[in-house]
Structure formats: C-alpha cells, structure tokens
Length: 138
Image 1 (tube, rainbow, N blue to C red):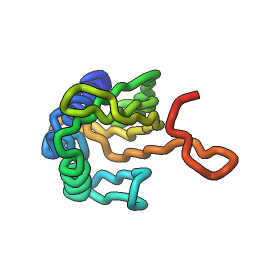
Image 2 (tube, one colour):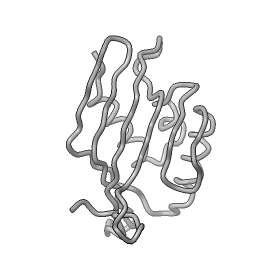
Image 3 (cartoon, rainbow, N blue to C red):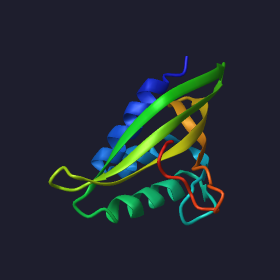
Image 4 (cartoon, rainbow, N blue to C red):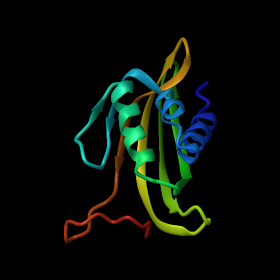
C-alpha cells in the first residue's frame, strides 16, 4: 500500500531542511514536474534537484514551512495518485511568517524497488477573472 503520509512527511522535512538531495530522492529517476514557476516542466530527478537547489539557495536565512491539507489518495497496485492543497510559508530566521501561498498539488506515484516515488507532479493555483493567480485559499 502507498504510504502517502510518509511521502508528505518526507517532503515537508526536506523543504524545511532545505535539503535538495532528500527532496530529489522523493522522485523517480524519470520524473516529470509541471511546476508553476519559471519553467514549463522539469524532466528527470536531476532537473528537479537543480530546481530545489536554486529554490533553497534563494532563501538565504529564511525557511519554508509546508502544510498539507485535504490529502486524498487513489491507488491501484503499482500506481497511486495523491492530491492535496499545500500551504507554503516563507519564515524569517526570527520565526516571523513573511509571506504565504496555497496551491494545488497532484502526485502520480509509482512503486519502484526503492519504494514509492513521485513519477509526475503537477502544481497550480486557480486564476481569477483578471487572469492573476489566487494564492490564498478562499
């Protein structure tokens, strides 16, 4: 059975620690990531790791708190889909929340010899009538 709570916990821990290697290890070698920032997609674990290194490096002394809500899973043997709402909060070295956003995340997971891995990730936010992203859950 897919242990999605472990996957969520490991994702949160890797982001909090700014550990790009641990973050990338959640993904299959041939993973595809449809991110919502800067690039249309990241192809493969190495590209995802490079993206995480850039993201974490851009934070300086700040950290990111991650909270998953309404996590749901559908599974059929060797594959599973997990989808949720995820709140990312920038936190200063002094512990002050600087900014936050809530986005939608979908993981397509595949069972591998190394355990469950993210084979596909898609993140998004809804768009308002003005075409701008809605970054807070309403």
